[in-house]
Length: 516
Image (cartoon, rainbow, N blue to C red; front, side, top):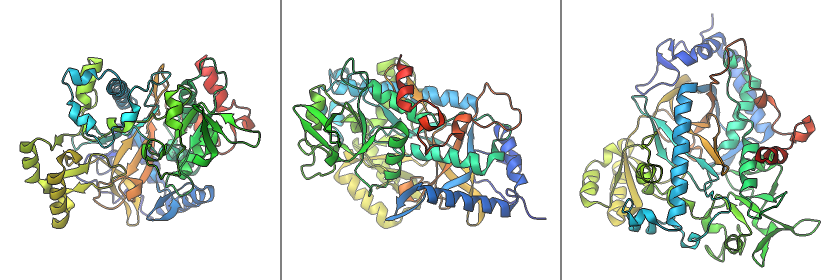
């Protein structure tokens, strides 16, 4: 008789998201564990091959090491209970509210400096602080239209915020595609669960973008998605979201600015643009204000924003709020702006501008994680316990030369999930990136988000740009009764056909109805 899938699975020393011990699934994972045990290794492998072919045929790819490949979806989902999600959701919303208040303050009255909660020098010295954003006031007060916060679970089970992503957070397209693939290829895994749907993300995002349009009384604001082009690693996501929202996908040469107004070139003439959902960094967005050699952006975009004729989402200047040194002050922001205690703690982090702290850290580099404050995608990170001597010497020199440019964090042994690898099913470290959308009148959080997996054994780097993969993330609906197989109807709809083809309202129509 062929072995079942989890017969030889041995959890690591970290907190395991599925098992509390050998053959002992966590309460919310009993049905999933049973379904896994019913699948033979041969059938499981065949299903995984079908998944890869599906992703390749539909172009669900990402760029790694210069090559396009199907995005790695691990077939064993991660389950989050309704109670834990309620806690997480509240913490995410609280954090977005505080960071919105912080950005509005530092580009306006700067009360937080006057009250000595955060040193003014810390913010103004950030490489991500953009002086051109000072005085810009969004039409509906929203600067963080989309955020993606990275959440990790420590060895004791505590959920903590590892970092904030408030510029151009990516990965949500894979959340939707993962769910679509799982419901088709592994439907029995859903038996006994009612999983909250994720397919409504595009309509919720479009609602936020429409609500951000600057022209009062505009019944049909023009929204476009600005991409750097086909060679960008996240280009699949750009095309996916534009298609799902029913908006134009544009590059810089498709737009022009005249007299403080942005226009899109079309075969029917120039059309006025109200909102740009940009997937280009600030540096390349407008060559008149930033990098003058940029051919990705559009000259004059910031002038249109300052004239009150254009909204850029996310707002220019958001990067200063996800500077990793600014991150250390977010709990203080929550107390200052909201008069609340933080729901989700930060990972213990050390600021290196203090000479005593810096010396303490330099003596313990082999026990800490060192991060450049302005990097993203896992770039530049040095994990002390696995770094060689040359890397530790190099990072010590970099810290001495520019203490403001680095932070140090305690090593968090990220929780693990059973993961399919070449050797079978083994524990691999995971994090979670929930996506929050600020629509002005409410903050909506996508149930679950993107669980990222560090595929190399023992690795703590989960970023896809560093070779990581992903899992479908299930948030259990507390209001549902567990009867038979319960699939989320919204997640069974095709993600490729226009919504109107199935007799369903187009996302823009849905967004307008929700506003009324």
